[in-house]
Amino acid sequence: MEKLETAIAAVIKKLFGHEAVVLLTRPDEQFGDYATNIALQLARPLGKNPREIGETLAAELRTSLGEQVQDVTIAGPGFLNITLSDQALGAMAGSAPAFRPNTYENQVVVAEYSDPNPFKVLHAGHLYTSVVGDALANLFETAGGEVHRVNFGGDVGLHVAKTMWAILAELGGEQPEKLQAVPPEKRSEWMAACYVRGTNAYEEDPDAKAKIVELNKRVYQIQAAGDHDSPLAHIYWTCRAWSYEYFDAFYARIGTKFEKYYPESEVAGLGLETVQAQLKKGVYEQSDGAVVFNGEKYGLHTRVFINSEGLPTYEAKDVGLIMQKWRDYHFDHSVVITGNDIVEYMKVVLKSIEQFEPELVGRTTHLTHGQVKLAGGVKMSSRKGNFLRAVDVLDEATRANHELTGQNNEQTMLAAVKYAFLRQRMGEDIIYDPKESVSLEGNSGPYLQYAHARARSIVRKSQQAPAPLASLQPGERSLARKISEYPEVLERATTAMLPHHICTYLYELAQTFNRFYEHNRVVDDPREAMRLQLVTIYADTLKAGLQVLGIAAPDQM
RNA sequence: GCACCCGUAGCUCAGCGGAUUAGAGUACUUGGCUUCGAACCAAGGGGUCGCAGGUUCGAAUCCUGCCGGGUGUACCA
Image 1 (cartoon, chains in turn blue, red):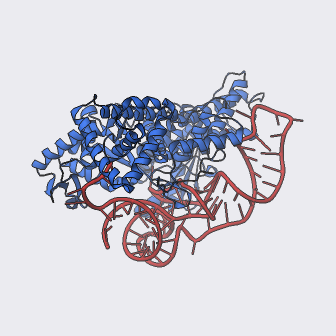
Image 2: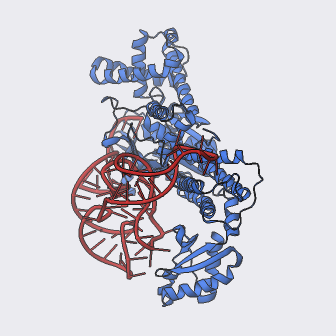
Image 3: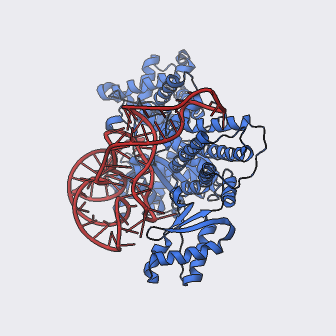
């Protein structure tokens, strides 16, 4: 495609002596394989009728592009529609499945996503952000990047103290040995229940609130002193470990894996140090007893990094996290994937770091997605009881899958859930309707898996050796044409960091195949060998695309 | 108040490097399995692209204003 674009630009230069940037698009199939409105754009600078320019250009292109082009036509006000020769199209389609962009070749990329807090439950939002983050990390990896997946979470703080308070109440005091009474498979549930109990107590019971505040300080001390021996420390470390086990199990189930967790406790110190050091250099300033960054100077808002008690706020911890990642990886790109509720917050944090580590910030991208909301715009709230856990979404999809097929296919269930989240453009809120959001038919993950399994089934049945694509019939040509678009789509999704482009494309690809399937026999057809090749590269392309999305493409389902 | 994001079929969403007749899915109404997997395919109805201006030969797409919704906005995370 780029070759064609430069070839056309060269022809324009030769014919009209004008430097032009030619952009080819993929028009409706009826118009051709590529289209450009360059003649329309040239009309003004050249002072000519666009159709006239188009005619001249088309005539020249027909001869100069030679064998690879079958036809160049003019339509409407002056669109140039280009149809490739079957050979050229076939060659493009053949190389499509193995295509990899080189955007991140030889580059170190750190992808941080998911970011759940220990001592709490994973909710639907974590599922969404994990799925999207994983797909983005795959995208960087596919484009040649050396990708490091990392995860950040608060293993200290008020939420921990709330849970710890309830844990102590459950255990009847600081008695770590009683933790053994909690069966391993119930641990995460038990802790989640403790968090709810602690949160309620914090709000309703002043006495409990005081104890939780006290407990919060003690947990900080355990961390600061490296205490692993006291009964309370024993309970804390054990339950903290349970949380990470629970996270790991969940990530394993949805098929993503982190090479490193950055617990808040491990970066808070560096954050505090950094902010204090930069306070002396005037990046941060004192204000009402707190240390703040005056974002107003940069059109942002002011935020507190160290509160008046001298404790680091989330801002300082984020400084620590960002600095620690920088030390650990010295990355070419750092991508942080979070919800869009913290965009302004992150701008302030990054702007402050930019004052002393401009290179780091220049290599950092904060990507945001929307929130997962319940149908009808209902906000999720644990207290109102309309809270959706990550497993609830998975369970619901499992149920729907079972209802439709009578089977419990984990791969299909995950395909449904992941695709439902990925197919939407990142950035806007996701409306989750427990009843029908995760669809298994139509534009859905299972549709793609089915369209893949069907193709593999054909390939299994054929005895012939595949033959190269040539002199294509309409149905064959449509499929080859669609396959040939894959590299462009992957490239676009990578540079824009928008995985949904792949979803849109794969659905169209599968749809094109299903139409082909409806009207064209493969096995025992005179054109079997060539069609076999077509079906194979189609299935390979679909599989490659699904792989980038983190969706399995089983040969049978 | 200010800042950022968003308003496209009943519902959920693509399209927004401006352009050839606004597209899917779902739901609804129909038709198609003695032939490679019907989680499929085909047909139909359904849209003043929030509103009003502007730029342009041409705007869902770019600019401005307004209306509506969301989020953020100093010691929470």
